[in-house]
Image 1 (tube, rainbow, N blue to C red):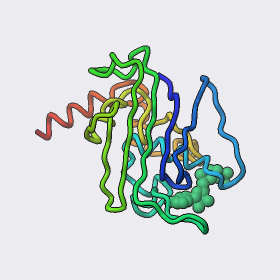
Image 2 (tube, helix red, strand yellow):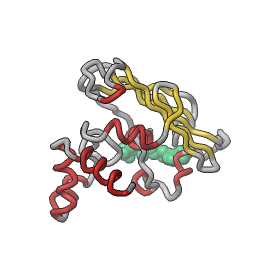
Image 3 (tube, protein in one colour):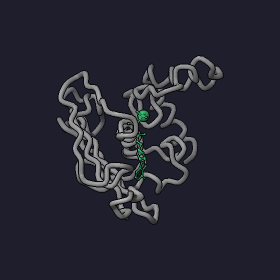
Length: 183
Ligand code: ATP
Ligand code: MG
């Protein structure tokens, strides 16, 4: 499973449609301060269903939409699409048959979020479900950001356990049990 590219439009500083390709197994994003490197990572987290504005370095969920600059007017909608290579079927279940998986999220100024899986409208839960147990997800250890190592070291045992359960691929079963118990 590999992230092949990210397409952004209207997301934070990426007002014009932009494609960020990841051509190899090891890629680096370089650029001067404020050029939008962290915005790319925020975009990855956002598409995977992040629902906390704070975790996206904003105050409200619509802060991810381009809010204008000295030369450009704000826009009313933002879209981000992640394209994953899935030739080994790591993204399992009914999606294992797809060699490529595109997940997309769109949001309007009215805070209306819409999700798509390979072009078909889906629920947020459909997106979060496919990444459960893969180590990837909005709050997974696949994204190591500034301050996270010290947060891990200082975390309480029950917080640390969440990371270990994801690494051991058991979080998806716990999630399913929770759902069944709530029915
Ligand atoms: P550093 O090297 O300092 O970490 P960076 O490359 O990670 O910088 P980012 O934090 O990704 O930079 O980008 C910050 C820029 O994104 C700022 O100029 C900020 O104004 C812009 N930005 C963030 N949200 C929006 C938005 N909603 N609309 C327009 N611009 C935005
Ligand atoms: Mg940064």
